[in-house]
Length: 217
Image 1 (cartoon, rainbow, N blue to C red):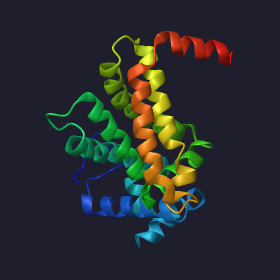
Image 2 (cartoon, helix red, strand yellow; image 1 turned 90 degrees about the vertical axis):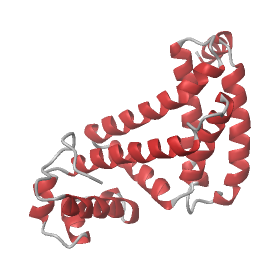
Image 3 (spheres, one colour; image 1 turned 45 degrees about the vertical axis):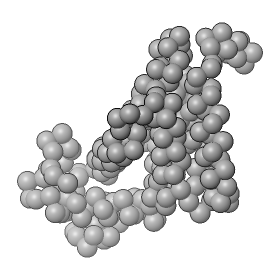
Image 4 (cartoon, one colour; image 1 turned 135 degrees about the vertical axis):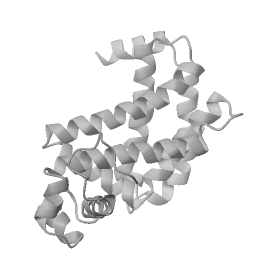
């Protein structure tokens, strides 16, 4: 990882220190939860003084921003490796996105990290905004494939379908994520999700969405 001028904080003293702080911050959030996510606790975790941490990251929200930016980069690399390979059909690309996301939810890092980020977002407008921006990127990535599979949908309808696909996957976290009660059911859930969500993306019509919204009202 190298320093970047778009990051918050000050990085002139070298990236090794920044790496230590980021790893400690991630570990605190995953292992100890949102309540423990303070600069003092992060400093203790990486055996630094609070002043050293706050020099690079004056506010803990800045750590959230960097962590989410790096998550976007890491997911982008996984997409390049698994999804954006030449020779795949659009349907297969969407299938791989769904499988990638649900496989990732089974990891301790993702299950714990995102549930704690959601908790922080309930009490911080800054964190809520950063989490929203993260998911907007996810929805755009899914929406690209939905739009190709179902070109008759409007841009807003594509977003609705992409949002539904994303929410369906994320909603599995408290039930099937790492250490959760039905984690052993994730393979079956993944198979069902890949089949049903792709079928939905391919066949849902503007009339379907309009009719469903009318019924909901």
